[in-house]
Image (cartoon, rainbow, N blue to C red):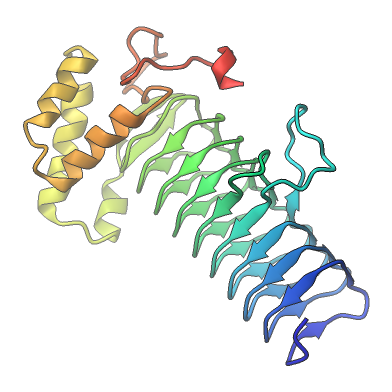
Length: 286
């Protein structure tokens, strides 16, 4: 533990192998149970509970009643086994009541990237992988093994089923859920419904007019031409030289659950997927 400029409140409890870089603040009534490593400038405002194995980067802000690194909510996993733990990057904010669980394996930790903003009572389950510059509104729930790419924004009380992927720049409206994958820059407007494209998000991200038009074309090709899914993907290949279109092809071909549709309740044999979609309740989805 560094002797330089660390501020640890007298009521905090620090146990085990806890390593703090310079300028770390541990507020009142925090509990840290190692092994934990915390980077420069990270602040625990108070009443936070951290459990190792846990690595936290620089300049994170952790508000009261945040819990990081506790055992996965997995009945098959022994809660007394540490496993691969939880790794958090730099510049994240965790507001009141956020909970993120450690991995349910010994190989790969639950991973949170950089500059993400977690609003009150949002949650990421075990083995999630979250990239960078995302915003999770109050009550957002990410189940186990969810993957979230860069620049995703969620509305309040939105939910993502286990093993799902949320593509780069996607937007989830409030009080909706997904059990299928949501492609990049699409908007989830109902349960498993990709009802629009995230035009405002693309503009804010500084995307060129050409790339925005390409996203429009992809959306129209997938959802508005009335062709079979495999035929729609073949049409995308005609423009595979464009990086933004190639990103969609790779996303769809890498999907294990199938991608969201544009309207209605997706049937098993029509969900856009390469390979076939996994429906909730299937053995492989547990």
